[in-house]
Structures are given as structure tokens and as C-alpha cells.
Amino acid sequence: MDAMEFFRNSSGNWRSQRTTHHLAFRRAETGTSEIFVEALGADDQKIVEICEMHDCDPAKAVGGAFVRWESAMAWDKEDENHEGTTVFALIPDEDNPQQGLLLRERGYAEIVPIAGRYHIDEEEALVLVTEYETMTTIERFWFANPDMRLRTSTVQRFGGFNTATYCTEMRVKEENTVSASPAPAYEQFCGW
Image 1 (cartoon, rainbow, N blue to C red):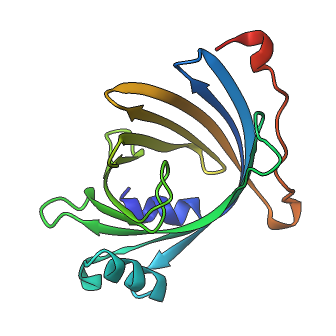
Image 2 (spheres, rainbow, N blue to C red; image 1 turned 180 degrees about the horizontal axis):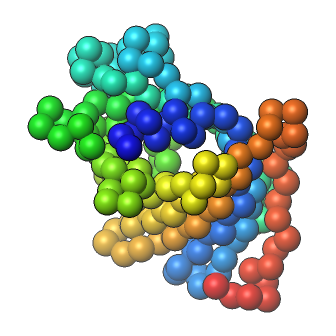
Image 3 (cartoon, rainbow, N blue to C red; image 1 turned 120 degrees about the vertical axis):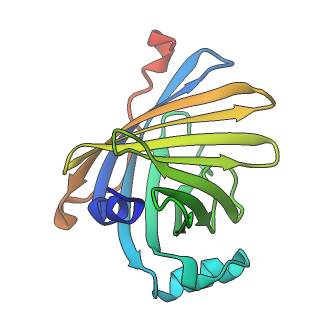
């Protein structure tokens, strides 16, 4: 499997259950998300635009994905908004198409355009590593079966791990999607 095939396999609607461990506070927070993924071909205008945004030659891109999400976390305040969209563009390394540059218009940990690295590991998981000015994120996505995707992520700030997240994502039919709602706040009694 290559990264573009991973995006094609991810296309569709997903419902995600998430647990984020806030390591410094030794607390866990739960949440849910509705996620839509659309694989994009190399000639898609969104791929061309994000390549140009990052001063990369669009002819080197093999495609990418458009992602939209709507999320809710247990500790959310009324004015917090966990909705958004982003575009990913894949530019494989010339000597190894299983890894390369991942261009985003919006990062995972900071809402800024960012370029990171991707690779497909020995278990056919997609691994994304993004270096920001003050932090590093590592995300790993893999399929347990065609309709169940798993995801882990860590955010490392100032040399130490700050959060670790685990998500279970189930494919859903479009007519069955619902708005995300916060999961019970079980972190009050389970710690982490």
C-alpha cells in the first residue's frame, strides 16, 4: 500500500471516538468526531493550490485528500469550535515512493499551513511527522479492517510529551451521520 491508496481507502464518512491523555495533568479527556475524507487526484485544483502555497512543483504531487471534521470534547467550553477542513498533498521522495513530503493547509496542532513528512511503515500504517516552531506531532493511522481505522498521535512540546491520543474510527453511511456530541466526562473518576 502507498499513501495515495491509504487516502483512497479512507474516503467516506467516519465516526471517531477519541481519548486524549493530558500527560502533565495526568488526566484523560474523551470526545467524538464526524470526519469526511475525499481522495484527490494529482490534477485536482486543491492539490495544485496547496503545492503553490508551499512553493512546490504541482507536477511532483501524486494526489492527496480533502478532510472535513466536526468534533466535541468533554472539557469544551461554549465558545470552543472543533470544526474545520484541510487539504493534504503528497509529494513522494524520488528514490522511495513509500515516503515523502506531506503538505497541509492547516496543521494538526497549529492552525497554519505546514509541511511535514510521511511514510508507510512495515505494517502498512500511514505515519505523519510534523515539526512546528514549538512542538512536534507524530500521527499513525492504520486499518483494523476496511471499515475500522485506528489512529494514535502524540504532541511533544519543549522536549517533553504533552498529549497522547488514541482514536477508533468507524466508517458510516452518509445517511447515518449525526452531529458530534461530547462523551461522558469519565476522566473525573478514572484519572488517566
